[in-house]
Length: 473
Image 1 (tube, rainbow, N blue to C red):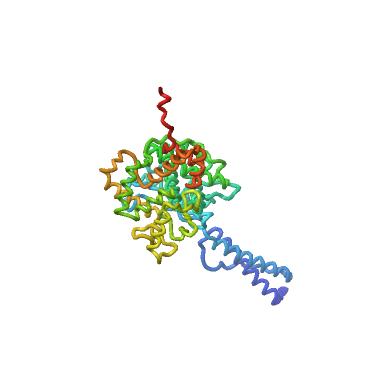
Image 2: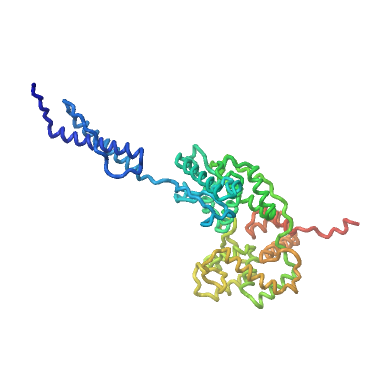
């Protein structure tokens, strides 16, 4: 028998084979984890390598293997470490007792593209509560809904869309997007109102099976259906205010290219009858102010800020020491629509305001002008601060009910604003000012636009004709 020639393997070739084994091992590990991402532990023993009879690997090829090995490792690590943008889909089944009277639904969280936070999405119902009345049926279809949502998310579905080229926002995710922007533009009270009314709209969409429909498919007919429901269940005034909120949200969506146009702004308001704040007569005003002068001087000063500055009550409760500039005779406030607004301090209240401030020489600049104990800090929301003064005034007004004889209608602090704007307009008319001239001057005084003042004057019937008896003879 002929002897077998022994093949000599150099040290360099041995090192090369080790690298090949490592590379093959990582390759198998990648393959295994691609089929089963939960696999753990080291790679399996690589298959036996057949060493070629002539094996000469250049230094260049060695470098290429090492670079690719690094790339494979980084890729595997990156894939395994990449966080999901969504949470597990969960279900709510009426609590521990499976209460069928409650609403059952599926829900999940998704990474918000604006805030960067995991945000809970609108619960998904899909008519399950309406169609199935037993525990067994509801659970069955609720779990089917959950599985369907999980499959959608795994396949890449995003409630916020895939980017500017492919708009796939649902109405819920579109509303979240708009509210995130609105929060930086409006006050806390307005934002809370937006969020509440928008939430009612989304709940309505869920109820009619359009909870996951793209926002571009929400049409005027759908919005009208919701507004009609609001009108029937509450009032036309509430319906009109809800329409204003939706229009503001849809305008933001239009400006950001999420929807083609805001059709909500073209929906007409419904007629609203009654319910407005009434103006006080001279006798009624005197009775109230005299009572406050004797029994509650801080409440009197609060009312006078409404009368003489034409502030809304909520604007008065925002005032701090820093907003008052006695030296220049100016007061600065944050209004409902225009942000910071500066007004002059009229002489009719300047002396009284100076005396009031002098009672608190150690007050800080951020102390509120009106609190239950005078000037000082008040750590609560402005709506609660406003409600405090509203109730405090009502208590005084109600104690005078026998003398005031107010009759039907709404008489509140806000009524003083109507009363004094009406008085100012009529006095300007008596001075020979035309309606346009009077409105232009009132616009500067109140901070309203001329169009707003014109509508306001006609709304409170401030513009009345002279005696027309001679026209009837």
